[in-house]
Length: 376
Image (cartoon, rainbow, N blue to C red; front, top):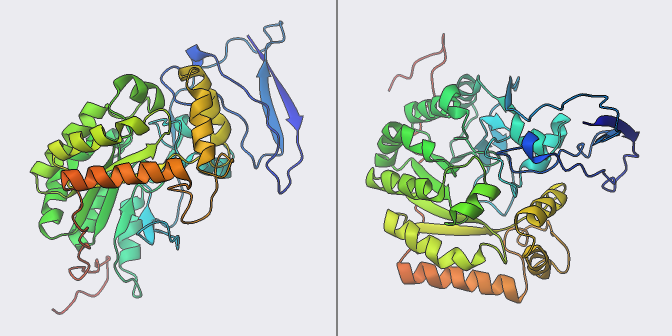
């Protein structure tokens, strides 16, 4: 039983001090985060505590709530030198997979939510994504380049089974022969092999499957609602068998917890049909610093100190350095060791093939209702 206390806090250029709320396990069963601390942009912090008076009654279990996102544009642009694409589409905001390390968590604070349990329970669906995409592709000044699908949250998270928003986007891209790269840790991607296989024949698609660990126990607590490691490997196998280029992403590498699996993950992925691989070091920007520490202390208390110590050794003593060129790989001896191990494993397995650029010369602008059809 608990009551609620609301405290004002000063919003400044520095990150505000927040009150830590570890939620009862019964209320967050099957979720990744342990707490739901108020977002950093809010002027007030809300903190649940036991006042002995049963004043609020029983608190509600955190259930998934999906709202419609009223977005008026669907293609997001970026100019980051750390990534290979300049545009992306995210069919959903928030992600029910609940991966504790997800670098997208802090983006939920822009919506007035917490980066903790809110991120994995308060979801937004862009149901008009396919229609918006068709309008943007039809724009007179639009020029094609690979669109990354799922750069922030997973396009194949559980609610996609009912919503089919990602599939609708793929149908538009296939019809217009527009190149797309997909990143997911869901086995649901195999549902769309009929579309992806046809696009692959025209060199219009590649899929990256994220495999963080092969240990079911670690995966279950770290990525509670994502597909099991075995299911992801089976997805690699099915996609590869259908002629769809598959990359395995060891992302993130968690030093002291999953980094010992780099070679075995690549071996299993190669056996399943993946012929390319990449990795990203664990990143702890903004609220993730505290969320990850809370989780680590509960899930792996015996390793928590070593994990944080190793991570800080790769960021000059800090939890995270956001500088381009550093944030995804880190620096120092341990980071160099991870990079070398990854490189040698790829070479030994023959996963060093050049990534062919997807074709953009086949693109055909969609014709909107009332529009002029092309003569040729």
